[in-house]
Length: 328
Image (cartoon, rainbow, N blue to C red; front, side, top):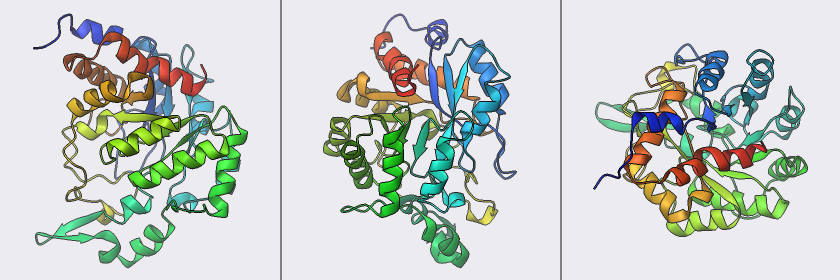
């Protein structure tokens, strides 16, 4: 039975004071247009009554973007940080150190998106009906992408990882994002974050789809938030995207068996199971084939209302927890 009291107006009302920690605004590659520029993203969020947004950029330190926007758009706060993708040569302590002092300073440090070994090693294309991985098909992909991609060792971390963890720990206002690593690597990162005294960690949205119950509990026990984003449950998930590569031929087809079947219904079940105090929802939107981030976040809220989440639980995952994460 559907819960009572749901309405379009209520989903809009729950946007007031909300924070979207995962917004992809332009500029971006010409092969992957964006629906909003940073100013439009901030202005639309402000007009919806939201409290803040966080820019995610896979090529640039987005705290430079937020520094500019915060001086132009009043009435909302924006933040940014650094994603350690192959444009930074993967694990790069110097890039992290620079980001922490650039503009208003990075609010987050993320261990890569598609530039993790777990992602890059599995991307590929169907050739005459046969799946061929990109690093096998394209020697330059193997050299320039896979060999620079991020891996988290099970045992002793590398000196570069140690330095990055130390840098984040020294800046209590900064949170760590696991990036699109494997589930086991995410568990290890959460353990290391706790060991190094890092207080705020976000488990990237790809990981709850593949991690076991025991792994997710372990990450929560080490103080991490589980992130869930709308972009992974949309009508564009079967299309090729070139979010990470200039080369059109590198755009990956949907990876066979990429995730177990996981839907927004599973998101609602996870929030109930693991506790709304341990979860954050975000849009992960900005790609031009999908709604702009503000509308996407409203749709996500509306879906969770349909799936029986209380207004209090939704406020936790879209307001209280992101607010604690950002220190506002």
